[in-house]
Length: 89
Image (cartoon, rainbow, N blue to C red):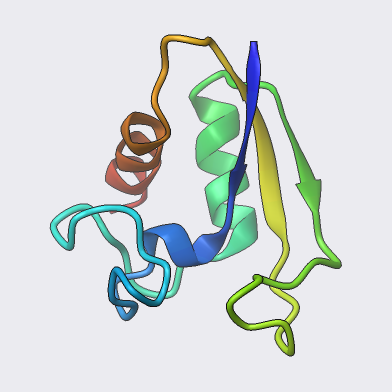
């Protein structure tokens, strides 16, 4: 098992790749909320924990939180992010 951090910015359609978006625009969503992402991860059956009082490193002044997800070693970060954002549309 490996752990992966998911920030809402990773799937935010308003962000560019340089601003932290990790998925292609066709997979990105508008205004992703931590709770919504956590709900989708839970529906996917993945073990996770939520860290609420954390700020995204590219925006240290804004506290948005992140989710720590436990994954199989064979699962890629991009694969999971696409699946999460696909489920949010």
